[in-house]
Image 1 (tube, rainbow, N blue to C red):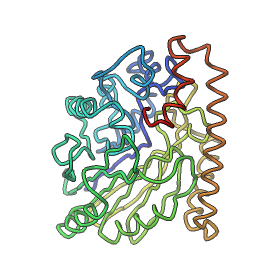
Image 2: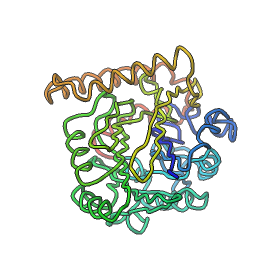
Image 3: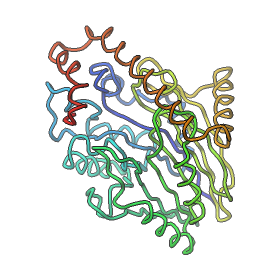
Image 4: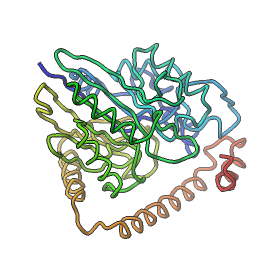
Length: 359
């Protein structure tokens, strides 16, 4: 008897700064239990474990309802109950947003998750965001899983998972030799790109060599390809499962369904998901599902594209980022009337605050 795991993309339960009052948190409060379609909830219920990257805090600690900075990408504590109801029972919190509202809010998020029977990974050895790698061990039937959360990003609000990459390699090697199937959740890569960069490919290869069976990536907010290497599965980025991004390419994702037994990975498949106008994920079918599967296959081919040298990759990344910023600035100006007046000056001050390092 094996174990069946569903891996989801990024889950962000707050409103982004440009969508206050009409982002994910607002939609969750509006629809509550009915936010997620019964079709997806039923599909997730067919798995032993459902795993996602939680790209926000679920806490009211330090919340100021008049302050844009305090509200952005902050979910209510009660949203943890909804995640649990939908079958999500494992979340990675080693990412670049978990400390955005302070360590107290991050620790409160961990407590809230555990109260809803959701196990956080990547929160440090003692689940308090201090140094020390956390290894979450779980047994399903005869299968032994060891799960590690790690962020390779070097940003202001990152929690790296409690240690560095060499620590994770050593732990992975030891656990693998002891008979554990090691799953590493990685926050890595560059936003908006369709394929992994050279560092991602190198990191993945080292983890596979150390014995990792599954490597699940997040952060780019776009879907990147999946490859099998020496019997291990590497999903470079699953996209956004729940998010309020305005970019079309960030509004679809894949659910990765993996079957694992004593021999290793016995099977896997992907299921395209698209966000509706109120940021609710819908399982795609028919022509749209076929189109997204073809696009996913194209992105898988990009993984081994010899033309993607680092110079070309970085130039493409800068171009994608510039286009995204222009689109965001245009969106903010056109939709300013939809925001409360108290936030208008804060929206325009945000770029200056970011440059000064106080956002």
